Length: 116
Image (cartoon, rainbow, N blue to C red; front, side, top):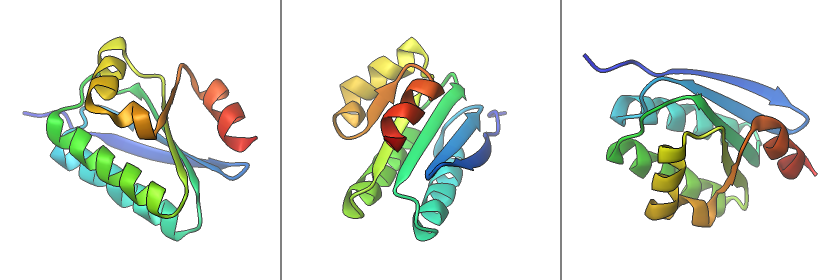
């Protein structure tokens, strides 16, 4: 049985931080997208996905993350990732996500760059 993804959010200083815990697949990706679109509708233009609790992202999960990036580009917003495993970071670079969304080593570094 596939591990369910747990998603939580925090808002601080104009930055919405989305925390994931578990496997980002089609169901997990859809949950992240649902939350990201709610944040966009609420007026957030900077969204940080903290993937510290995620060890695996499959191809469907990546395609959903690309859809979120496209939506952020449409509204001239910024989507960033932090706390990726080396494998996920490498995959994001190979798949081109890093071309349109920044990747930071940790949340503090990301928050400083996104809020300034």
